Amino acid sequence: MSDNFDKSNINEAEKSKSNDSEQSLEDAAEGSDEALQKKIKSGSPSTQRVQRPHSSPPRFVTVDELLETAKGVTNMVLAHEIVVNGDFRIKPVELPENSLEKRVKEIVHKAFWDCLSVQLSEDPPTYDHAIKLVGEIKETLLSFLLPGHTRLRNQITEVLDLDLIKQEAENGALDISKLAEFIIGIMGTLCAPARDEEVRKLKDIKEIVSLFRAIFSVLDLMKVDMANFAVSSIRPHLMQQSVDYERKKFQELLEKQPNSLDFVTQWLEEAADDLMKYKKALPGGGGAAGSGDGPVPNPVAVQNYAYLKLLKWDHLQRPFPETVLMDQSRFQELQLQLEQLTVLGAVLLVTFSMAASGISSQANFAEKLKMIVKILLTDMHLPSFHLKDALTMVGEKVCLEVNSCLSLCGFTPFTTDKETVLKGQIQAVASPDDPIRRIMDARILTFLETYLASGHQKSLPAVPGGLGPVQKELEEVAVKFVRLVNYNKMVFSPYYDAILSKILVRA
Image 1: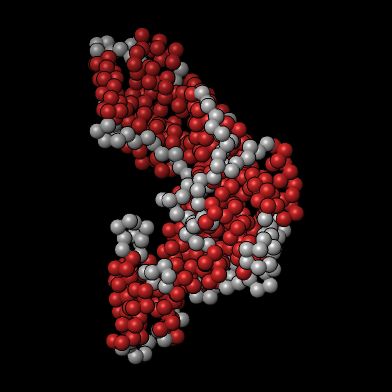
Image 2: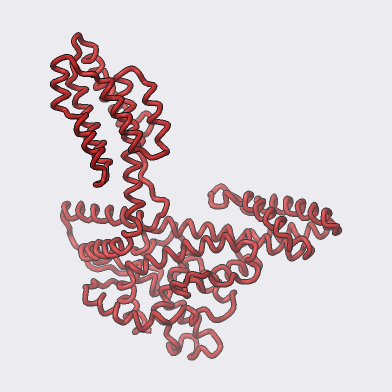
């Protein structure tokens, strides 16, 4: 099912949202950690909605419309990437080795530089190509200047006056080396500190053709530096503009492709159904299971719960909701990090439960043991990684480290039987159904749920018991997750509210 939302629907939904926003996800968070872990399954849809939602009737579009839509999506993705990814950087284009494009580029460039070399070797030298290069360099240097760089602008314009340079060339008075020296000096003034070494090396090049090639190579790097500086400068001011821009572009896409909210609708329906079933099953939840009576979750709770479901998504089997599609790789990365944290936390919990309290409370030992286990689980995200085999190695290493610490602290080392028990419990963590692993998983979800429900509070909630050793890593993931969710809400909450207003009425 899908609906073609117009602006009036969105405005209506925005008005109704303010009444619900003060309610927290805590209404849906009651109950044990185990219950929360059960209700957020690995992206498993409700049994009634496993099929692709029915879409609107197909609509024929022209090639121009497709190209225009593709361009809009590309621009939207770029704006989104700049705002969401704090590490976003523009990188120099590097063509693949032995590619046709790279070979053609090398051939053309070689022909150009060979031509320049021939011209400069003539008697008298011909400077046509060289003057064109100076003109390109001049334009590039001027493009680096800020409005306040009046003195530098005048200096570049005066020294690199192409008309004057042509006259000097015609009269045999052109000193190309002197021009190159001036250009290198200006580059040293304008370049980022990271390029100082490259600019300094230019001064050691005496052959004029090689020097020009090197100058253009460094100028290309400086262009990238300038673009990245511009991106970092405007990022703080780009947030609201990006929100409006993404929403506008998505609305345009929705008008061209009315079924662009089908998977979002399915995603939110499943979240609402799961929450209602969970609340009905709670003592005093009201209404027998399946009776249709009982409390209806508020839209904010459903949205927050839906985001948590993305951390248990089956990316190979299920299409990702359209409104979070640009962040699918980020959610996938967070999902993998949380899986690793769950296993790491479970191993440490089992280990410290069996070890003497005297060593488990030692911060240095706890940190050392955590780093050892993290290193052994580093490749957990790879398809070739076998968790059971890795945990066998983890068990061996953990027993070795614990016994060493026990001896140093004056405690009796583990007996062989106790080592066998500990190794067995660590190996058992490989199963997703392991009780300790399920407890850690549920507590991690509870922590994320609480933080998400706290709105825009700066302080993080208290970490549930047993998660202390991985608190730092968990908080880092939580901050990334909530930042991602909050930005997505800013852009798409009008659509979510419009969909949920219909879903929850039916409930």
